[in-house]
Each structure stands twice: as structure tokens, then as C-alpha cells.
Amino acid sequence: MLKDFIDSFKSSVISSTDKNGFPFSSYAPFIKIDGKFYIYISAMAKHYENLSINSKSTLFFIEDENLTSNIFARKRALLQCDVKKLLRETNEFEILIDEFEKRHGETVKILKKMKDFSFFEFTPFYGEAVFGFGEAYNIGGEKFEDLIQRGDLKGHEK
Image (cartoon, rainbow, N blue to C red; front, side, top):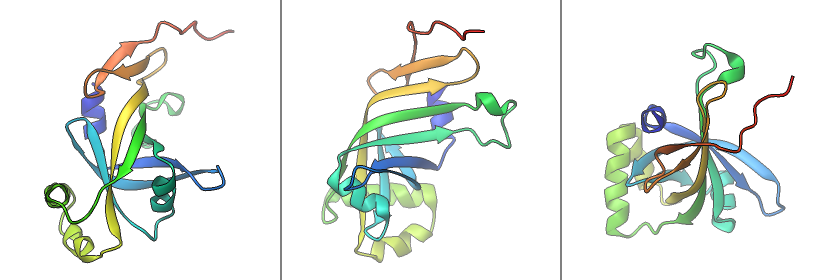
């Protein structure tokens, strides 16, 4: 269920923290390989700077509100991640850029030529998912794709 949900997205909301400790949210297209997420962004983007100075971030995936059956119960998943910037002049870069182009199309050919773009690798270490009322889970497993029933839920008070 979780894998299919996340795989249905081409981009993720990214939460990062700036140099003054303030939260910042944006989004970026991503690819996922072996349980890790990769984004390719410009140094001109605010989250590029934030991710360069703070190696913790959250990826957030949320159901389109136009498709949900109940606005109070939108399906969503968040993954808290360790983040690292990857070097451009590597074999890994070439593999990632090829995968990015396969998933996101011709625009990637143009972006590849822009030297201020870099890949950031997101490795999940904690996650939560909600798939409806009373359907809240922790996320775990080797590739952070397993839903784990939360035993800490006590229900809503009336």
C-alpha cells in the first residue's frame, strides 16, 4: 500500500531548515532507488542552501485534495531523512541523471547542462503514514516501505 502510494508521485514536498532555524517548505521532482530518494535542484533554490547546511529534512507525500473522499482524512506519508549532497563528476551522477531523464523527460537534458544543479540523496530513518481515520502507521523495514501498526494510539476523545 505505502510503496504504491509513494510511487504514484513524481514530486515531493520538502521541509528543510534555514541557517536561522526557520522551517521552509518547497517541492522537487524525485527518483527512488533502493529505498533512497534523489532530487536534482539548482543552487538558486532556497532548499539547496538549506539542505547544504542542515543534513536533516522531511519528504512529505499527500493525496490530491481534489481526489480525496474526505478532506479531513487525506492519505499522506512523511519520511524524515538524512540528506547529503552528491558530487557531479562521478559515475553515480551519470546513473542518476539517466534515471531522472527516464522518469521526468526531456527537460532533464537541459538541466544537466546547468552546472549549478546537484543531486541530493535522502535516506529515510523514520516515517509515519495515515491512510484514513484510525489508519495511522509508523513506517519501517529495510527500504522504509513497511507499515507498522501504531500501538500508541488511544483514539479520539469525545
